Image (cartoon, rainbow, N blue to C red; front, side):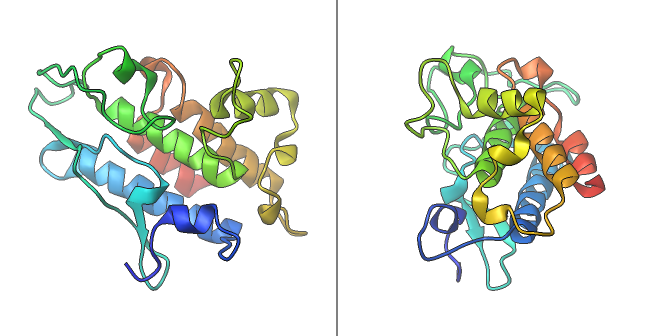
Length: 201
């Protein structure tokens, strides 16, 4: 793709994405997941959603790529988990949901977790494996504490803090990221709820 991957823009000294671009990219990714989970006739779980697998075209439109770990779920409509269990841990450290490490079956909620971490990374400017996240601190808990303590602007990537920044919009986006990246799959939003919230923000 002409503009490479999202990773090359998020963590580069030469490229910078403003808030408008980041919001558009996250909306593109959410719409792609919505299609995979709900609208393509079968349920496809990507299993490896992360910045290096988000590709950008000439107009900075984002596309989800690399379906090497993807799973097609053959199950009754409305079910959230795969009928076939797998002992292989799917995904990338930091982005893979914790339940996969416990041997749980692949599910759409796993992609939601990865999406939540991706969204928080785009807003905060730190990867989930940043050295600061140790001793029980994670990207999720860091953002959740900022929401609870009403200091969200203090954790946002400084590049995004322009004079006309909309604090309410940033708080709403961080909330979505936190609600998608809870440890328990049952506490996470579903992709339809994510899309609704993103386009209402």
